[in-house]
Image (cartoon, rainbow, N blue to C red; front, side):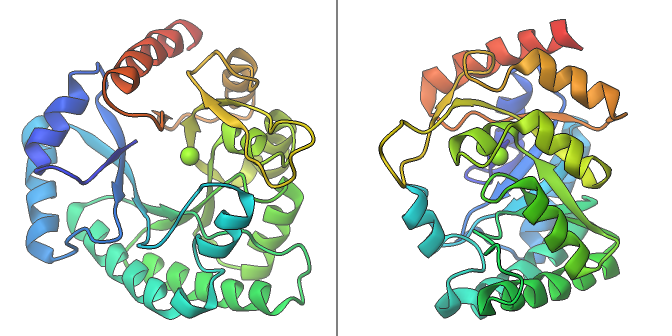
Length: 267
Ligand code: MG
């Protein structure tokens, strides 16, 4: 999982140097979504023989500092930015189509558990609009897991009622947000999983309401990566395994190289 923060050819060559041939591209809140930029990505992918499985969108103003901050800033929950983020996501779908990628994804934010809550209804309607644009572009739209329990997510998918609405399953997020055992969650939503993040982490510290858990190098946290891979095999998942490691610099490079090796052994 990498970001569009460098020229496409340069970025792809740096990712390939980690020993992988596919991945997911994240668009920052200010990434240029012009057709010419999309064409540049399309051309670089072809030249480097690299496969993008998903394009992720993020939005200006989002913060993952702690759970209340995530609730107040991420995705389509904040009403003040809902319409501008919807418009940008529709643009991102068109960008993704030009790049030639069959799936768009994002964190939609904390979906309330109450199906009659105004935010639930508003976000459900926003997701319908995004799904319809993605369908017209031949894409799935995938929701990142973690901020709500699997049963809430499954109910939300049913309420949206769009066949191209899918899940990008991140087992570490279930732990970091304290929303439930990731392997049990994967069983609940198994039929909707189109892509996964291979990420690890530990549960939130006890006695600190609102605190997030800590992300850890793959295999060093509480997910249980061997059981995660075994569960993916059991449900017949054959799509890409995308490593996500949200640190920077040498630490990120070292941890990703180790994760590639670990996944080679497990698969
Ligand atoms: Mg993730």
